[in-house]
Each structure stands twice: as C-alpha cells, then as structure tokens.
Image (tube, rainbow, N blue to C red; front, side, top):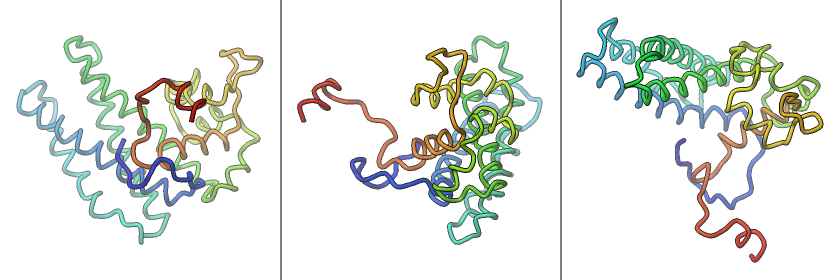
Length: 223
C-alpha cells in the first residue's frame, strides 16, 4: 500500500469517489512496477517462453501519463478499469503457469493476490459508477442487499465472494457481521461494506496499518 501524506491522528474524511480513485491510481502504479520487475525476471531467466510479458506490460505503461484528477470521473474510472482488466488478464495467465510449480509458490502467491485485488476493484468501481455512488450518503441506497450479493451482481468472481475470500471476509469480521455469530452465515449491508473498504484502503493517512511499540491495553486505557 502506498504511503500517503498526513498525520494518521487526523480526522478520517468521509468516503468520496474522487479520493478513492486517487488512491487506486497510486496502488496501480505500485502494481505496474511489481509486474515490470516480474516481467524482466521472467525474460532474463527464461522461466517460460509462452510469450513476452514485458511487451504486454509496456502496453499498460501509458496509464501513468493519462490519469489526471482534472479529468472527468467517467474518464478516470474507465481508465482504471481498463488497466485493471489488462492486469487481471496477464496475472491470470501467469497464475496458470505457476499453479503446479511448487518452487514458484512465492511468485504464484503474489500473482494471485494481485489477481484478487484487480477482480474486486473492477467489480466495485463498476458498481459504484453504474449506481452513481459518488458520495458517502449515496452508499445508504444499497444497504438493502448483502455485500457479497452486491459484489457478484457487478461481476466479481463467485470464488471470491461465495464463500467470501480473505479480503472480503475481513470486512465481515470487522463488523462481526454474522447471523447469530455463525461464520457460515455472513450478513452485511453492501453500503456499509463498501464504505468500510473505501475508508480502510483509501482514506488513511501515512501508512494503512501501524505496529504498536507497547501493548494495546497500555495505549488505549492509560492514555
């Protein structure tokens, strides 16, 4: 996750599509850098020669020069979705190659992580724009449907939401959103779930997570 300016103790702003897109832009830049390094390693070591991944990466590179906060929301959303779809396609193809290669389990894990995030973000941005969820209050309109059902509705892979993948499950866990405490029965309003994801991954200041130097009890109780 990119380091963002600001003090983590500052008040957390409300969800807005503009802030979300700016953070996604920074994230995609990091992912593109990872894939560039990965592609160079593959070609240097001739791990496999099915195709030239670096050439495909080069098709994605113009993204950095095309994204601008002065562009319309529609343009930036479509640009981000197009780039993520290309990344998802590439990582999916690479995953199939490494899936049964135990020596490359670390590479496979990183590719799978990138694939999952791409798939989720594509579905979420598609749903946000299609249903015009541009401001915090707009998210309340989709609280009549469960988060996983809303994600599937907008194209997120069934394997990521039924049952919930680790990323989606984190949101249910944070809300203790299980009927009668039964983890096999997740139940969370889509609007609150998307709001949580947006604030957790795009509205933070500094780093998204910090490791305390003393015990949690000391920090929260004695301060």
